[in-house]
Image (tube, rainbow, N blue to C red; front, side, top):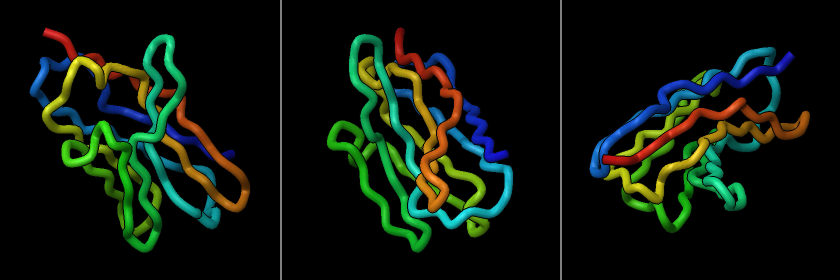
Length: 115
């Protein structure tokens, strides 16, 4: 059974940094891409960052230049390094794997940016 487990969320002051991690287990599946999404209260889920197995990545406009997505050679871990955090980055962050067996989601990890 495929499982995605996120970690690294928490409370941070504006201007601070956090690193989210997502561990993927449950067998080998052809991966199209790995991504992080987020959903703030009362808002739709939005794409934060996406990375393809051969390296290219893209980012949402609101996080461009502040966040960095990365993965490992085994494609079983994906990280999101977040710098210069703002209160508007407060949301539940979800890890996503898009594969030939369909999309898989983690349970989400809360990120709160507040003084």
